[in-house]
Length: 235
Image (cartoon, rainbow, N blue to C red; front, side, top):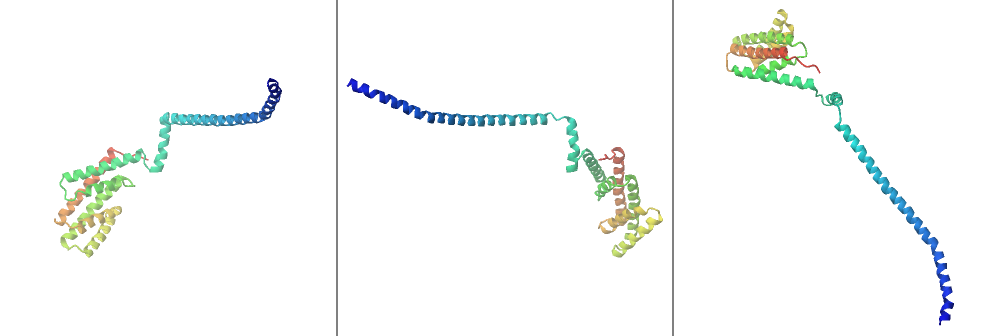
């Protein structure tokens, strides 16, 4: 038995060696493929981490730029905002100036117990926001209002207010404006005459004319005072 086992042993060892030698290329190929897969996946992970770090670096740089913006850069961005929205420092100041003038004239006329006090802020806004010289516009409105209320009171006293009397009053205001060399005040005279004659009121015509003149003159005075103390800011 021992001899038989010894005789069979060498062939088995040789067979194992031949099988191992034949399996070696397969094993080396598998190892190479595993190595390639590991390199590719490792490269992907490395590139992913590197890209993530790169993104974090860019974000930190942008954040530092936003935080460390200098006042000069901020001031340089103001004209862009002004162009886009039409809001700048001069616009805000002029809005506050107009608001103060309108409210002050309204409160003053209301405090004087004028019956239609709202004409004071209307006149103040017209004078303050006039595209031409406010003083010239104020003088034209003052003279035209005086002429208009006088003509309206005279017509309303002697004639019943109707379309014929109203048309005659507008025509007379134009003639008197030309004679008195205040032609540009004609528009304000027509406005004042229209207010007195067309708006119904319970008082006598002369009293209505006097109240209207006081209300308009009050608004003109407040607008001129604010214009002198608080000049308009240029955009």
